[in-house]
Amino acid sequence: MSFVLTPKHLEQIEELKGRYPSAHALALPLLWMVQEQEGVITLDAIDCIAPYCDLPSMELYRIATFYTMFHLEPVGTYHIQLCKTLSCALCGKGEILERLQAKLGIKAGETTADGRFTISQVECLGSCGSAPVMQINEEYHENLTPQKIDEILEALE
Amino acid sequence: MSQVTITVDAQDYRVEEGSLLIEVLIQNGIKIPYFCYHEALGADGNCRMCMVEIEGQKRPQIACDTIVKEGMGVRTKGENINGVRQRILELELINHPVDCPVCDQAGECKLQDFYMDYGLYDSHIDMRQKIHGKKHVDLGSNVMLDQERCVLCARCTRFTADVTKTHELGIIGRGDHARVSTMPGRKLENPYAMNVVDLCPVGALTSKDFRFHQRVWFLKSTPSVCHGCAMGCNIFIDHNKAKYKEDTIYRFRPRRNDAVNGHFICDAGRLSYKALQENRQKEFELGGDSCTEQEALEAVKTAILEAQNITILIDANLYNEEIERIIVFASGIGATVLCPSDCYYDESFGDTWLKKPWRAANIEYINRTEIEHRLPEGSVDLLISFNHPSSKTVDSRLKIIFATHQGHKADILLPISLFSESSGSLTNIHGMTQHCEKAVEGEAPDLIRLVDMIEGEL
Image (cartoon, rainbow over all chains, first blue to last red; front, side, top):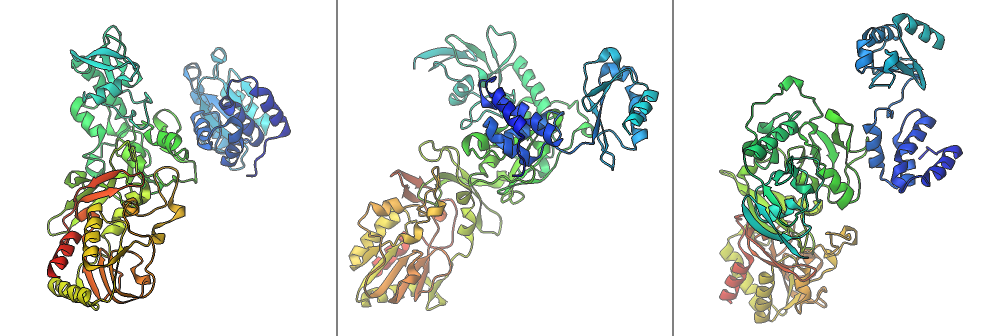
């Protein structure tokens, strides 16, 4: 096993333990820690964190595959998550996606060859009032138009 | 436990308080469809097939999550509940490929059975809309997965999680894309893995060893006991005699016996049917050349009459009746009967569940007789071996071997039937005596008949 949790995360685990009635409940926070550290959830990391939450690796793998926000394959440096749910869909998510795909030369679900960008379509980001919306890594971009997309991508490049 | 009275389809039943409704229904022979519930794995409540109507409840309830109560009124039949089951079945079948003609489970498939009982609808689903999964995933341990046929009942994953506790299988993904899988690059690998094939109610998990070999409706099932070790797990021998072919065993399946093996058997025992049928000794032989039964029996008689001393080796896999017959025969000709047992002991085979290190089905019966577990001492003039694996390590002037399989060197060689070709009883390591029925019609003669004939000649 080459994966190890950082001292900061180990400290957090100790703190979290007291919050839950059983160690099983640490599964989700632990998977988040792995993703934060590595950007991706590897089997190696799953094997490493399994004892902390007293679950077999298979259970953690199941959880990781169930939630779409956990990545079992590496994503680009900039992970563009475009909302595809009702409000955004009605307010022009389609042309936003088209512009994103045209600018980056990839389709939704793909990563650019240089590993910088990944486009995903996700369910509601909870910001319907400012649709269409996308999230790049941790940051929200609202009231999108194709022109805005050009500006945002250029600012990143 | 106190008893309560419940009414099922207008008939009263006295049942134990606190028991699961589905168990009560199954135990009383009341027809109820289900996928995910299993007597060895308990209820999971995911398949929704076991819906029943309960008086006073607005909606139908699943029987596997209902505890019986005094005065409970249950309906398992009727247009209403059948309609509910039909709709659930249709949901189960949304992404099912309906490839029964090429599916090995056909004939013993719960989906097929329930469709005939409750389905028979015109599907709302166009074949082209179905989500496709992988059709032949080799999970390991001879288990093949067809993701499209799976109903996600989770029996297989619960088996690896709760019974073997090896956790190789899990349901991954979500929604229409949920599927049974191992972790990437890892295999289903435990000595009981093939039980998931029996547990699977549909054709999702099939045995690599059995699939495509035989349609199940051609098979005859004969109750027997596994000879793989001293545990004596109960099995069904599934066999078929095709036209112009020998009666052939196609698989062993576990037969439920809560006192011995529960619902399961180990993979080694399950696959032991193959070696059983290979390299059979079919001919009577004299000095390595084939001869007639009469010539062989004549030679045995002469050898016994001329022998200075006789030692008999007896295989610890023979039936109790055969062992008793040989003991009587031995005392008649003044022979010493031995069963050298070192060759049966394999520490690495044993575990804490069904696999016993004593790899001989009837070692316990030998223990209960006067037969000693040692090799013969001093010089042996005539050795008669009843299929004992150590017969070649014993030096003797003359050797007579009764053998089920080839590979023995003897002056006189007589073929004998397999356990599957005759009936008899076995005493397992816990002292339980169990009966095995004759499954297959074999060519080799029955051991007791041969001994009777030899004794008659003397």
